[in-house]
Length: 383
Ligand code: PMP
Ligand code: GLN
Image (cartoon, rainbow, N blue to C red; front, side, top):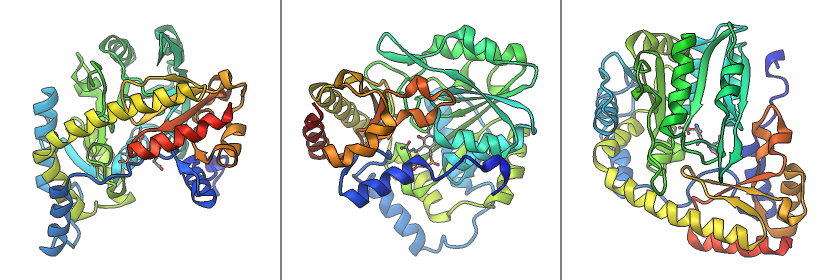
């Protein structure tokens, strides 16, 4: 294994899902829903296979999906992208982020990223030979947020890219317009490129609203926005995503992407195009149902003795383990299947400074109500 990838073992999601299978524990670790997406969209994928969408699609993506993505960005956010030159399709958001890093960061360039960060970010920054500069999100007033001065201090003359994930996995924070403005100000001042991971764009709760960074003043021209079908339509196994950006940035990212995977599975592109055009009302029902599941899990975790943070978006709750007398989340997750028959994710693996997250576990609530109820009942045994 090349030196820059040493230190990246098996992903925590694979490790924890394997632990759940091995022990028969309830898996509130890896974030994937246990109910399927909209029926007509599933039928559209089957129909695409039956009707012959089975050979290589165009490298940049099927025109119908690129048009659907452009229409979605325009209709929902007022952001206008030319489907022919400013949209392209990737193997999930994961490839969109990876191709962006490989295309935009030179070896030695610095990439600012908010920790705790989604695990693929550190690896793809390392693959590019770039250096990550973490800005720590800390609990403040019931949500995780950053200090704008720490963000400013993280930027140096070597900084090239800032990677922004909102709604944020694993903290559940949805950045406010004010927080995004402070990020945008830094980008404009230091001429940075922003790469945004917006896979949870529809999954926001209460009055939280997802604001794309590209919609702020002076940001469209310097932002590569990434999203995917997985979370929005409950098809995390489809690995169908997309990138929107000004044409020169798209060309850069596309140059890399074409040699990683060339194209993306054709039937799922058709079905994702169908879903973007027709299933937004279904997504609104999903959002409402997830909000109720969030409350169900938070209430249950509190009853079990955790101090839980009620997230404004995503699938995930952060739970502080200290009220139960524990201090190390990594130790606790390894014991959790035996002691309580539940699997969670130790938040500390998403940090450069693990001590900042040592006492948090991440629990997923994209699960049937009876699964959540059974899990929190079992967790009550920890007291
Ligand atoms: N980004 C974030 C923040 C995620 O939580 C996930 C995981 N679902 C992904 C990217 C991966 O998305 P995809 O499956 O579309 O590659
Ligand atoms: N995004 C999912 C999570 O955060 C996991 C995706 C994966 O397994 N790579 O739980």
